[in-house]
Image 1: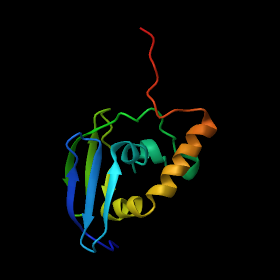
Image 2: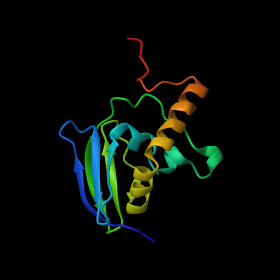
Image 3: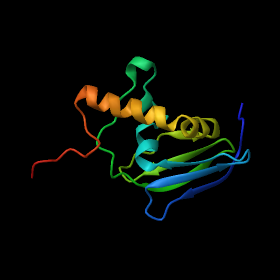
Image 4: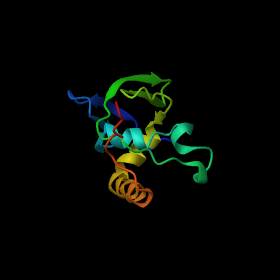
Length: 124
């Protein structure tokens, strides 16, 4: 059950972050990169903890647009064309409340797997 409802979702002018303000007074600034790598989509989260994917190379990702989904979530479309994650209000507030720990876990996973936040360089 949703503990708070968003009053405002505002994408920064540079499209690299989303500010979410809730009716309980909590406000969080979430980077596009963080939202992309924490996408609640099956493509990222898998169907179990073992299937979850560590998504590298998204340091430059931006938010292209957002679409409301009913009165419980928003679909965020990123400029890498990822668009399958539905960010519920509960998930957004959980991301905000646990941003630092989740971000550090992500950085640790990248290091453990020899991956980078930088996009892979493709040979010409």
